[in-house]
Image (tube, rainbow, N blue to C red; front, side, top):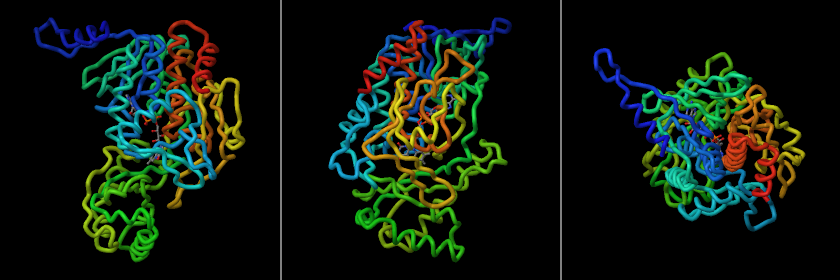
Length: 441
Ligand SMILES: Cc1cc2nc3c(=O)[nH]c(=O)nc-3n(C[C@H](O)[C@H](O)[C@H](O)COP(=O)(O)OP(=O)(O)OC[C@H]3O[C@@H](n4cnc5c(N)ncnc54)[C@H](O)[C@@H]3O)c2cc1C
């Protein structure tokens, strides 16, 4: 309530010199500031709200969900243990990720699907993901959501982030938080405030998701073998560029004729700034859709009557900047399914690296098992009142190709939001860890 009143005052600020209305700026205090409303941010804001903190959630787009909705990735991985023998999906942990996915299932009428090598995923509809995220955040109480709010500055003093500046629908807003959870997917606020980070942009390739309607539903059962053969031929004779061979299905789509496809590009060029690279990727991949679709219509019977239904509003960038934390999730911790007494989230997805080849490189660990992510992987070395969650936590390259998935992002987000609420209330982090671990099991 108080935050809303202060927000209203921003618009009332006037420049007294010429009585000309002028954009003002105001500083809003809160217990926990969550930056980024993707899977991790939604979980973090909900957790902090549940813990009784006064929370503000900032998101640069007009809806929640992050890559789950903007890049329309279409399936949640990391919710269920890998199991080549079981007939049912077994959740890796209790707690928020489980509650979120149950809500998503009942609202969207989907159920877990076993895709390959005992891996279970939950297909979802992106607009329903955004709706569920919005409802869950609102129900937690104490969370003020500010959409179209982009953070462009963050400052720290005495190892504490004490000022964050955003443009909210092009109005400047300043925030003075007791604790911050950076869920930007790029560790943006932490890096702006001076935390050391590493650039993972060259680790993995991005992809553009698009949906075709009126595709022969039999294609899903037959698989993409015929499509790949035709695409290879076209690439070899020069009628399509090499990227077109990197087309993949989004599991769980297509049985009703609406088929989501993922066109993976090549990993970032290390010599180009990421903003330049992303601009090129967006433009080149979108320009390719028309010739690619025309080719499919003309050469693969299943697509003969298909139409382009939609294209994801944003290219899906799989990996970006991540912090160098007080602990770094190592590749061996993932592959040995290692547990930790400070574990605050469980990862169960294999390492899945989308590199230069058309298919991902999968590295599995023991089935029906999981690894722990210790709290210190969410804590930048330089900042005491900041946690990160989701795909910008501290991890080695291989470990991140596992820990970045949506199910795990929901889990690390919940943990970071809970820990931030404890920090804001001056309570020990060990107590937060104990509470999170009780909720997981
Ligand atoms: C092509 C592709 C396919 C994938 N397939 C799957 C899959 O099938 N299953 C799966 O589980 N995972 C998949 N993933 C991985 C998964 O989607 C992401 O790793 C996960 O969604 C990350 O969640 P997050 O909350 O950490 O970050 P994000 O989803 O990136 O959320 C970050 C949020 O912060 C906001 N933000 C960023 N900067 C600012 C700022 N300065 N100010 C305010 N807001 C800001 C963004 O708008 C966004 O909403 C895929 C990823 C890609 C790219």
